[in-house]
Image (cartoon, rainbow, N blue to C red):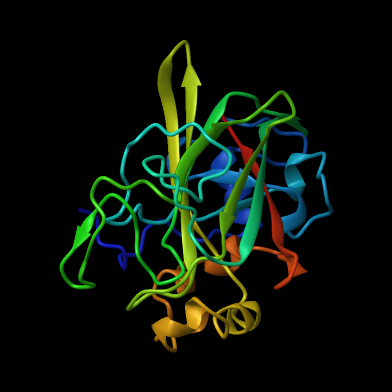
Length: 255
């Protein structure tokens, strides 16, 4: 198993990112490795929404897969329920939309058929499909809060889930990975984590069922992985406790 607290990847300045891509004024892009160097544009970048050119793209860090990934091939938008029995996880609703683009010279075009896997803990910090002696849970045979979607012609894939809880040693987060599939084969992979604003987490975790877990032991600022570029992976949440929250995360990739 991977260590969920291990640092992976690095944060690069825009200047260094362009150097790695071989870009200069009037230059052309060269292929970057699919694992580790991915280019994010739009709402979560320093540029404008829907950036149209490479200079608006920002390199984001890859982060560790962690010990709780399970390959279960659940193709579904709503990941809240167990497929066996159908029990839906209780928690504040969260709708998460990914918008994936292909970064080419001076353009960011929609990228279809990218497989996006999402997995996370429930309101009490428990993952499905695994046994953890330290946190004293065994959920093998269950698959709540896991699933994947393929991006559509507009590069979009949406998930309906819940706001995550917490577990010892980590700030509130969820995991996602992307697989580029060409001619039925995986030709590139990327894994990282998404984080949640502490101010909103404080509000969400003050209500049931989250509050039965007690006060979390890590803020973003004290999380070892968040300190390694998590501010570039922080979700911009819209909504409320009563309506639920939504977030859009724009991803540009160079292939």
